[in-house]
Length: 621
Ligand code: ADP
Ligand code: MG
Image (tube, rainbow, N blue to C red; front, side, top):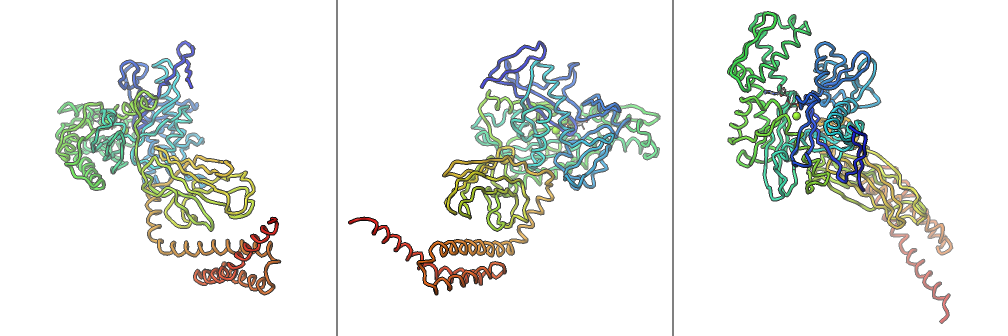
C-alpha cells in the first residue's frame, strides 16, 4: 500500500511509496534524531533551527503558566526552577519507587508512587506525569525538529534503549513513541546501533565479537555482542547506572572548592552560584579533552585545572568502568583476545584518559572515528533505513529472561516459551475442552519459573468464545506465542476444527525490576522440590476429576446395560475417588482412581459389543 505524506512547508501531498523512518537516540542526558539521506545514503543527525546543535538535552521545563519547553531552553531552568525542570527521566522508565529507592534524592523534582500503579509518577504543580508521558515530550520535540528540517511529516521511528533494559522499560519506550505520534517500528539496543554506525554487521559475512563501551552523562554500560549473518546477539552487559560525566564534573567542583578553603555546603546553598560553578566545571572538563590547562575564576574561587590534575581526580571512576569490562567479558565467557572491535560511545569517551584506560585494558586500538555523541542515533537511522525497505533486513537477537506460558487445569503453569530462549521466537501448543459443549476457554498468560501459576506473574488474559458444541476433549485449541524482537508478546488462541480465533498483545506489566527478576528465579530453585510434588498432586486431582466426570456420564446414559450391583459398586468407587480429591494424599488418590478404572473398564468394552450387535441387527443379511 502506498503511503501518503503531507509536505509541511507548502501543505501539498506527497505520494511516496517508501516512507521515511527516523532513528532516535533517547538518551539520559542528551537525545538526538537522525535519518538516512535518500541521495547520499548516509545517516545524518538533524541540527536545531539555528543550525548549530545536534544534541537535544533530555530536559523538560514546565513554566508557571504550564507552557512546556524541551531541550537547551529547558536546561537553563535546572538551577533556578528545579521543581519544574525534569531531567534524567530515562532512569525512571518502567520503574517503581522501590526500584529507584536510595537514588530518589538524586532527582531535583518530586517523584511519587501510587499504590494503584507500581510505576513512579512525577509531580509538577499538582499535576502528575508518567515517565512515559515525559519521554514522549522529548520525542515530540525531536519529531518536530526533523519535520521542520525536511519539510515533511514523519510518523515512523526506530528508538534505541540500553541493552540491559527489560521488557517493561522497552514497552514504556515504545509507548512514549506512540504518545508522541510515532509508530515505533523497532526498539534497538544502543550497542547494536553503535555497531551499525561503523557498518559492522551490515554484511552478512561479518562474523565478529565486539565490545561497546558507552560512557554518557550519568550512566555507564559495556556490552559484549556477537555478530553473525547480520544477527546481533548480546552476550553480556555490565555497568553502573549512576556513573558518568556528571561524576567528573562533581570531582572538579570539589577540587576547586577544597582548594579555595571555602565551605562547600554554604557555597552551594546559593543555587545560582552552584549552577555557575557546575557549568564552569563541565566546560573545563570538555576543554581538557583537547588542551592541557584551563583557567578561570568565579566569585573569588580559582578555577584552574591541569589535565594531569583532572586525570588524578577521575582515576577511581575510570577504574570502575574497567572492572565492569572485565566482568562483562567473564560473563560472556570470552578473553580479551576474543574481541575483534572496541567501539566507543557517549560524550565522556572523548576524555583522553578514558580512551587510554580502555585501549590499555583491551590491548587494542579503539573504534572512535564516529562522533561518540551521535553514533547511536546514526546507527538507529541505519536500522530505520533497513526497516523502511531500503536495505536488506537485519535481525536483533536477545533472550527472554523468564519463561512464558499459560494456566492449565488446576492452576498449573504450562510453559510455552522457556526462559533463555533467543528472541524473536514463536511456539504453539494444543489444548482441549474439559466439558461437553464448552463454548469458551479462558487463556491466562503468565511469566515465571514456578510450577503453580499463583507464584508467577500474570501478564494478561482473554477468552476464546464461540466454540461450536462438541463433546469434551474433541475441540482442538491451539495457543501460539509470538515473541518479537522487542520482547513484546502476541498470544493467539484458535480452535482448529471451527477456525474461531482470538488474540491479544500482552504488554508485560511495568515495574519488574532486575531485583524482582532475580527473586523470581531464586524462588523457583528454592521451591523446586515442593513445586514438583504440588504439581504431581494437582495432576492426580485433574485425572481424578476427569474420570469421575466421564464415569458419571457413562452410567447415566447406559444404566440399563449394567446390573444393579455393578451400578452400586461403581457409585461407591466414584465417591471414594471424590473423597480423596479434597485431601493431599496423592498416592491414596491414585489408588482410588486405579480401582475405579479397573472396575469400569470392562463396561466400556461390553457397551461396544452391544453397540456393534445392535448395528448388525439393523442390517438385513
Ligand atoms: P547520555 O548518553 O547519557 O545521554 P551523552 O553521550 O550525550 O550522554 O554524554 C554526555 C556527557 O558527555 C556529559 O557529561 C558531557 O559533559 C560529556 N562530554 C561531552 N563532550 C565532552 C568532551 N569533549 N570531553 C569530555 N566530556 C564530554
Ligand atoms: Mg547515550
